[in-house]
Image (cartoon, rainbow, N blue to C red):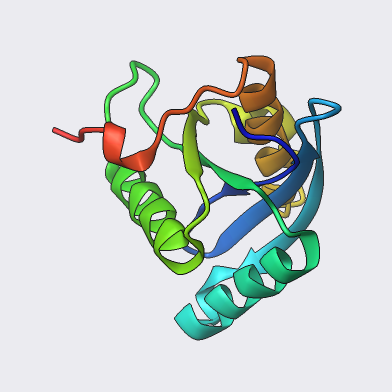
Length: 140
């Protein structure tokens, strides 16, 4: 079981929402939005800066799927992000269903990715922090 600070991610091609939470309190809050379109180096530097600042014990990445749970193009991209995140940090990375997370927090401004990440991370806490890792997920 993971203990300590956990960073949650809502991965997108243009923006990556980030949330922070604690296993002690079982609560998550929005943290920031990384501009993924700024390029790979800038994206991974922003992630490295967050890791240095927050010293997480694990990460949670939202897994986008269709309403029926089947995969979609974004599913593979989120899995690849999760695998690269593990490869760069060697910290545990867990996946959780992110269906409807953006719908719940869409305030019409278009900049709600950090709030979506908080919903994703909070859901992971609420579900008992399941240890579903990227390598456990098969995409047909």
